[in-house]
Every structure is written in C-alpha cells, then in structure tokens.
Image (spheres, chains in turn brown, yellow):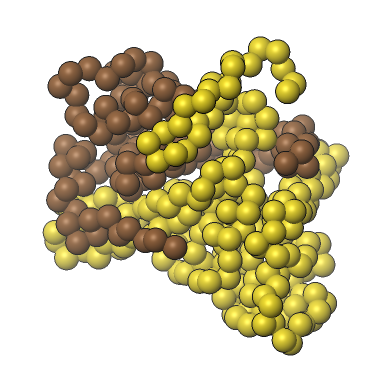
Length: 118
Length: 211
C-alpha cells in the first residue's frame, strides 16, 4: 500500500490552490458524478483544467481527488467554483447527506442483481 | 447488453489507466469496508473492483472542520486520513464505490462527512486481532449503519475459531450476518457484498411492511 501524505507539513500549498478558502461545498458527496460542460479555457487555474479534462465522462468526486492527489475538501472547493460558473454539472446520489434516508427495496434489488451478475 | 440507448463503449482511458464510466452513469452508491491494519481491506476491494484500487485522503484539523481556516499555522493539529477505494459498475446507470477505511479512532470523526448515505458496511475481521473489530462494530452501531461481519481466514490462523465462537467473542447480535471469506478470491469477495446487500434488503423489506 502506498501512502502519499499530501502536504500535511505544508498546508500553504492547499491554501493557495483554493485561493485561501477553507469552506467546501458540502453538496458534493464522495460519489457525486461530475460531468464537464465545456472545454478548458486559456488562463484557467491548472486544477480546474485537469478537472474539466478528467470529467469528459462522468467521474466521481473521490476519483477526481485521487487523480489530482488532493484532499477531498480541496476538491469540493474547486468543484464548487466550476459548478457556480456552469462549467460542470453534478449528478448527486439518491442517498444523499440526509442521515435519515434509507435505501428502498427496489434500489437494493437492482444492486443485488448487479452484484450477482459480476 | 441490456438497453439499446447506450452510448458506444468508450475505448479511452485516463492518464493513470483508469477506465471511465459510461456516459449514462447517474447514480453513485457507497459501501464501506472497515477493519484494522493489515486485515485485508484493500485485498477485498481489489478482488471485486473493476479498477485498480485508488488511494485518496481527507485532511482535518483537531476540530474536524476541514482545511484549517488559517492554513494550520496556529498550532492546531492537522490530521490526514487516507483510504482506498474501488469501483463496480452495476449497470449502465448505477455505480457502486467500495471504500476500504481504517478503523482507528480519528477516522470516525470523518464518518459523517465522508460516508453519510452509505448503503452499509462490511466489518472485516482477523481472528488473531479481534479487539480491532470491537471498536468498529461499536461505532457503526452508533452511526446506525447496517453491517455484516466477514472473517478473513488467513492461512496461519491455526486456532480456527468457529463462527459461533467469534459471534460470542464479538458480542454480535443474532440478526447480524457473520460469514467466512477469503479476501483474495473474487467469488468470495462478491459473496460478502451479496450477503450485505441481501441483509439490507431484508431490513428495508421489514421497514416497508411495518409502515
């Protein structure tokens, strides 16, 4: 197992990437699927460019974080920027952040069917 | 395969060799595999995942509010929690993400932020280090996350405790499924996931008929 402790000793870099912000957009779940709605434009922040390249096909937030080697919180902030300017769309999971939501039997049957067909 | 509306399969891969999802993918789901260090979480994820397991991390301050407001320069402790994950495309629209999560204390501070909305969890047990599992089970009960317990049988597990003995040792209620597995084997890993989702299905069924 390879562990890449990113910048634990130097949070300054993360601070720079996010333009000094530390509050992430909580609407992005780990498994929210992100889709680019435009091509990267000249002059865009390099992390934004990488996200737009990566999300030409639906890509989960957690995959974006792994590919960019950035912590989840930082990626949520970057995705919030792109969402606010309409450069990406987000397909949120049906079982969202609300702790009270339980999966229904129809959904679970679909999951079971998919797993049995593996 | 099934639907005729699907896009042609995309041959493109990302720079790291990761195959992208189909463009019809719309719903992400989560299952978490919890267990102590070296119990075989990554092995289990790898055995069933369609991608090579990836690694990512979350940074938190002692107060648990994400990247520190002041860049962590005020003497607050910054902690990094790393975890692995894999992926299973269940069908054209649904994709299941499987997370291998460390069971240590600091990880549970992040549970709500990372794993709210999780379908359920698998507690992976090494009978040589049963104490690790205690804490995970306690925390999952606290977060009201349904789970099953899978005993990863290691070759040098000479004691070979029976499942009944393990259930007693873990003080596990009768209605929580407990099974043997070999995390290295795909069919065994698949059986663990099916056992969990079947358990979730029974719980949902009971709840729907009660309401």
